[in-house]
Length: 208
Ligand code: 5GP
Image (cartoon, rainbow, N blue to C red; front, top):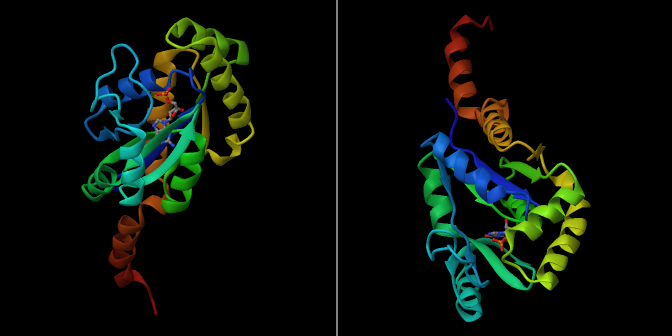
């Protein structure tokens, strides 16, 4: 019935977005995830071309200049951006494309793709966010502080999003994300072709 939907998933660093997205992709073949480009160093276990495309600052800036990104932003001292080609191709194929990006990028996507669905994932409390960031054990104290401070700034922009989704229980969070996407697909604004066909079929019953 409906065409593919572009879903932006944002959330505080440490909210568990990565795990939620991974589980969401396992739920249906209709979803595909855009792999971002970044200048940050890989964390242990992260693979180039799987978690991110890890590049130098020079390469990132070249890609910006070549119009190769649909959006990009700076976060905690590094560049992050969404490669254009993959997203445009997958949307044209009718796939549901997921972007896991921060708020500045989300704002740009909202302008470029007004029909996109914007979801914001958060732990239930600020203290829980701090606990999760620390338990990751991969970041220095300075980086943790930068991420918490950024979280405060982001908390002021949450109005941008269509739905807030609390990640307390992982399975519940994944099914809430799934439901939000399914609900969005049924909105008239995302079903113009279907409504057009319906109208055409009804014309014959309409008295002039
Ligand atoms: P991390 O370093 O923890 O992997 O990511 C830091 C932040 O950058 C997260 O909020 C993540 O969602 C965001 N991010 C990842 N890829 C992109 C991207 O392509 N564009 C933007 N704007 N943000 C991104």
